[in-house]
Length: 116
Length: 114
Image 1 (cartoon, rainbow over the protein chains, first blue to last red):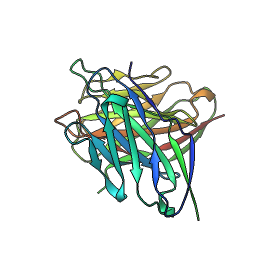
Image 2 (image 1 turned 90 degrees about the vertical axis):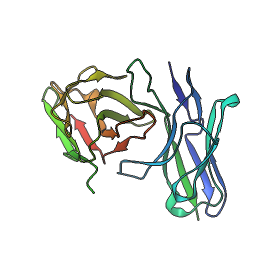
Image 3 (image 1 turned 90 degrees about the horizontal axis):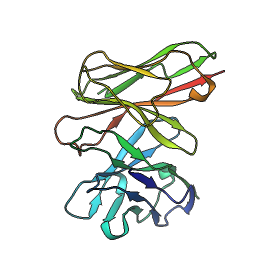
Image 4 (image 1 turned 135 degrees about the vertical axis):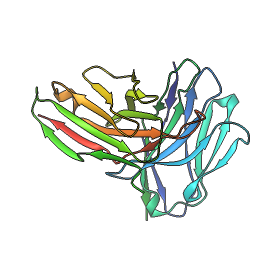
């Protein structure tokens, strides 16, 4: 069965510093990978996605992620964080298959705190 | 653009009461989903519907029923609510075509069962 691990429950970063959020997945085929962000009391907003091709993908709000098949990882990065980046971040893998299974498997999330 | 709309936004129920959570999307998406979000658990798939008239179980379907009323609407019903179903419920939809299209989420329904 597929699974997603986000090893860091909480991360604290100073405003202006760089950020890397870790995500590891377990999946039997080429994965469809996503990063979503959730602000308090809000729904989930897509940051970026990976299906195939270039392993470095660019997203919204200055985020990027790198797919590394050998490490089964899809880490999210940002060169310089802003206070507005404080939120919950979720990594997810798509379950889509020819057999009809559908939906996303999510990691448990990483709560990002920005220090002034 | 409304996107995915969920009603109600908040609800408090007593154990044993029933309730239907409503979800509608105006993006002409074929696939729709219900997830629940619990602290420290991420989101878990309850049910999904690949198209009008079809529904399938996800990871945590017990205690829930769903109806895909038409292409736009996908409802989630709790027949006899239990405290373990206290959660935030999210509806999502996905565009037709390739399966790698991302899901679009509503703002959630916060449900408390006493």
